[in-house]
Image (cartoon, rainbow over all chains, first blue to last red; front, side):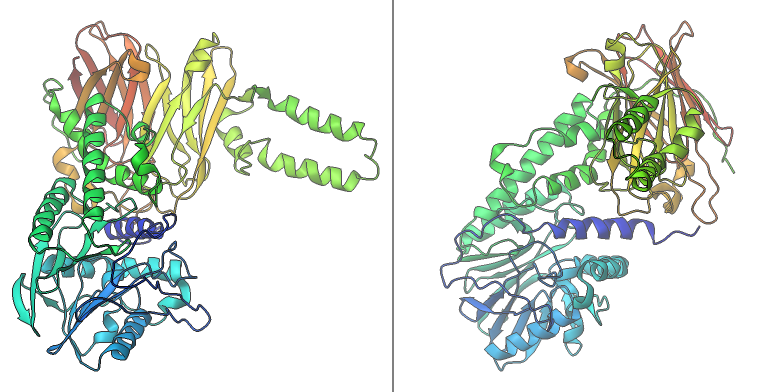
Length: 352
Length: 277
């Protein structure tokens, strides 16, 4: 028998997608940004129309919010917030959605708002609904952090297989199209907006954050979640926590007006950031303590979860995922913590 | 559920059908119902593989499904190459039974037999991870000294593929540098706040033989002895056990000094590690 698929990319991709599948299911949308009422997309499955409706959240700045729903064919698997800044110097697009179709409809939705041309397209990390709409921007040099591009190239095919399986016709004509150009983090003046592209990490190895110092809007990518359990298959918890502390300082200095997470309700304060931090702290402590006690993975999965997290969306499914992928590292550290005695001088020979 | 001998269950079903007085009218349906019953052999999980598993592993010996054998797994295998399973047959001990060995089997795996465990001087408790090719019942079949098998089980779903992709160290080639290295450590008072727990990890690719060009290469035997050469437990491992097996044992009592963990793989490579609390 031949392997069905390449080893690591397949399960990592699957993990991410199953994680994404429960991104939104339970939580009611809490209070949204003050500028207007949220109008989440309403997908039409017969016409394969995502019903994308840009909502203005600041000067020149719009979000296109994903469905507040489970990951399904009914919503076209559109559960991500994308956005754009339409300046006199042209339009910057942030994330391109889960499919070619999404990218095309996103581009038309932008064109309904502004006649200005799209001049830059940013994919904030390597996950598929951050970049699968790139096909619609073939005339623009799509951009991401170098590490994200490498990840898109390595895992794109597996993402594609899984999204086709989960989303069906919505994926027609979609081919994984990684960002073409590695972007350099830093500040830039763009059409009268003082923008900052900051590389943080922890949710994935390369998490791009777009900060608009002129409007106080932060596109936080996968670093911030709200009212749901953060997804962690690609995560490094200590790095993620450090990034959130840094992001909190940056947001306070702005000062922040609107926080746009890639998944979760758009909000106007640090609520999502604090929730994410609270969760990561608790998760890290729980895993470390469990490993020191000598618990097996199955026992950790059965531990009680504090009440303040229990009503979050994707609980307990996301907890199970996080523990499954993150606990083994803690276990090994605990096993190595004490000497297990001298190793007898047995020279291994290969078995074949 | 009280343990019910399979034969008795069948008899009850037949008995009920006969007593309804509708036997003649329902004869075709009755035989159909019985035929369906026979396909799973009374398996609480309704698996058609059960009669085959039973014949293959337990032969003609008496079998009961028992809630005195606890098997816990996740409802869905998040990582099909590392599915965590907990087995606890202490209720059988509490009921006065003596346990000879425990077989772990996944009905629908290409290699069904995961491992066999003889808990000689330790508790009949075990935690390990294994590879799951597709959703399947996972069964712990416990043979007691009276010659009966007590079977507990759980169903684990999976997206699939756990057995037919190479492990990480096989894929990156690093397995050969760490082959049969052991990490082991005792932990106190974990299970119900008492006793000694031993967690053992042996570095091994545990190749299933189901990946093209990679023959089966796995640990076959592991055992733990004390300094007086008394056997505390013995285990026979098969292909589905996860790469770099990490296995958790419960020693009801503290080990008397340094213990020795030994074993070998099917390539003849030895495993040896001294372990002290």
